Image (cartoon, rainbow, N blue to C red; front, side, top):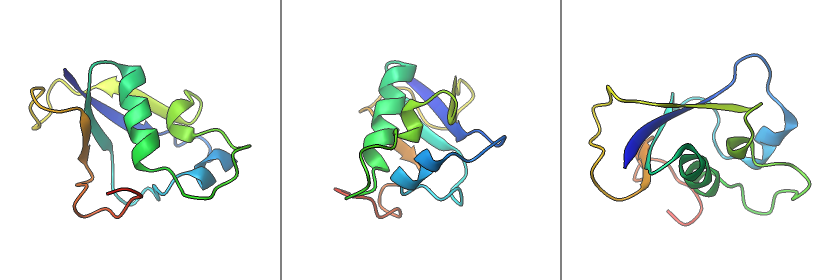
Length: 97
């Protein structure tokens, strides 16, 4: 596994962000996953806004909305279960968490 850093792109805020509970106040989203695709999928599921229009794309899955890079210098270990490491799932109230 690797640790990935996901950040919304600052150059614009597309309508797609209406589909996510992430409000930008939690800093970078840190995810442990095997690949960038898996990291995006984990973030997309974690922050999914219930009952949101399915015509909007999930911003975590869109390269135009979110950047993803390996965080090799992370304080989080690469070993362990795949999932969101930051913001802390216990402090962030998302669907199913």
